[in-house]
Image (cartoon, rainbow, N blue to C red; front, side, top):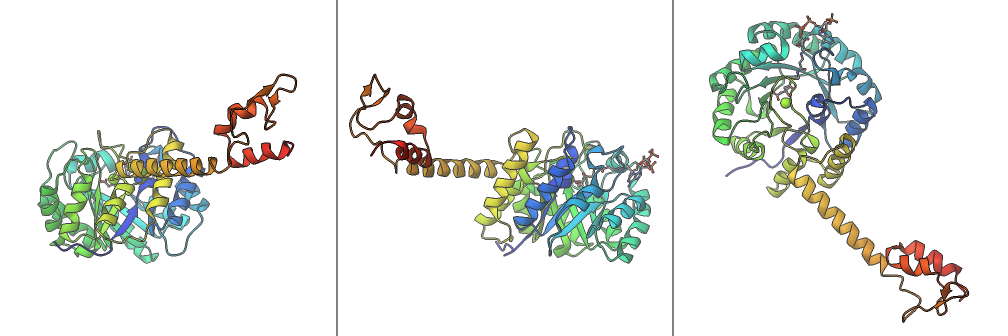
Length: 362
Ligand code: HMG
Ligand code: MG
């Protein structure tokens, strides 16, 4: 089995992840998330959407998010744009790449962007031309390429058709998306085979959601197809508000763990990623949806606790036998500690113990 030596990860948590949050997430948290991800080594971050705020209120602050982040050299910040108005917003906000998002299923196209597949391509045409004119990278997304919440299974020929249309618009990259996370690997192979008949494999990416727990298996299948660009979401956040029942993307931590195990490089720091996943989950008030991330975070917590325990024993109790309290002073007649200091000794940090010892008569 030949697998790639290096893959690129597009971190979609700040957009695909957060867009589905029912409670408003503050602009400050979105900015901090993006900055932390860039610092962890992610070179491609889907940062915002310039869509109708009536359709996706959570993404209404895209301009403020882009204005607030610390732009890291070498990082490509992308955003979704459904029409020319969205493109204008994205250009003004200084995004590096815009994403036009179509679908391989008519029903989903109608529900998500309120037009047919053919109409969407006509709408995207001037967007694509203007994006190129502005010197931006252009990405096309094929939603429901592996199953539709309204129509069920989707034929590989429908995928090929939309990929061909996006290629014709001049897309630099095209995403094959399992929007509702229903596919199994046997569906991944024909979908990519169909797509590669229309567009170069090295510029196709795999975007899997994990609704049925198949995302990592599907990543493995896509690797076997030769795919080298994968989308994932920190802490497994996400879903699409117009795809009923769909849960988050494959968790970035799970993806990184798999790739690291396979000896495939990504340029991303797994340990830092795990910490970011735990941080954002805490901010959102829930446990992260990542098996690898939670397991590694627990391991890190256990290691930290045992390191602390090791330092705790470094300062021994000043009494070598049992302390005897002098009723007049309320202190141990041997070492001079108070009853409280004796009782709390085992839970004090080294520094606290040393502070107590410093107050005792030598
Ligand atoms: P519409 O209602 O047909 O369009 O929506 P409209 O032109 O009649 O506009 C409706 C309102 O939106 C108007 O405001 C416009 O001004 C405004 P009003 O006059 O009623 O106050 N508007 C905009 N505002 C800001 N930015 C814009 C914009 N455009 C119009 N760009 C439209 C059509 C495409 C706008 C709408 O359907 C829409 O925004 N859809 C976006 C849905 C979406 O973001 N879905 C989630 C992302 S896709 C996804 O998650 C899948 C993906 O992850 C891959 C995968 O997993 O499959 C990418
Ligand atoms: Mg998605």
